[in-house]
Image (cartoon, rainbow, N blue to C red; front, side):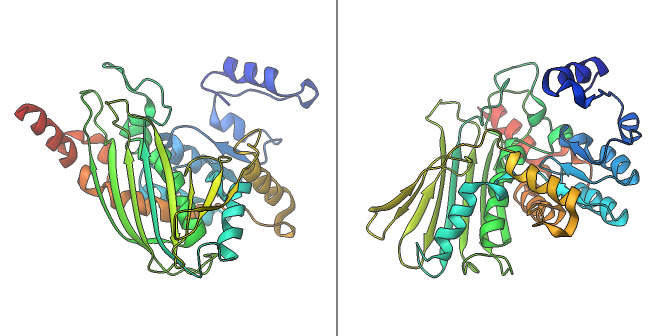
Length: 345
């Protein structure tokens, strides 16, 4: 389905074998009424997820929903609850949970590559996130429109990293965040720099003892000085060693260092043809075969935890994220502070 029926049919013609008789739609209800449709992939901007999810859940069809699932925790919770009440599965697109690279990290940690427990996790991201249109003075991409995205690029990009930490180590608790807007582009209202501190809480799924480990993350999407991009995740362990890798890649190498900062091992990975394919295959198998297969590792529960962390980090900037904050930008404390700073300059 696309915004116009012609675009949907054009995509189907160019990407689906003719014998599959794939049909294009531009209306959700028309799509859901097709008996051949057994599941729905909701890949629109987050601002439309709730309305589409209501119809999909009511139709009794399982859904695979792009991240972030909602613009805030409250909206994410509403979406997850819709599928729970309809007794229909809700899968979420935190794709790194199914990467070969992620499995390698789990294995190295389980085998004691950095000791018996994790002591700290740090992440630094600097750059534009490859998002187009950031230089426009008159228009902004939907990822920087709070009514469509729920915030700045940390919502679209940062959520992946936060979910990775959750999956490997456990839930982030005691989250403290600071967000600000340092852009000279007056059109951009959302935050573009986020600092986050947290602690790993207890869990039943962590591959290594991680409770109490410190977490520090920095996302700097401002980068108006055009400094070299940075995407660096460091995981330190009790033996003084650490893992160092790109936080956002499905295939870039992982290096293991000892306590003297010497490289012990480096692992390389083949890039998947399609980054979403490994997780989508697990989701498809679960929909088709049910409990006879390994369940998808990404669902509404982990989406809720990640959404709660994002809200905690961004709450002060927006002055509460439990309401429709995207409709009251004139009250955002973070934006008001930016405007006051500009006036002083």
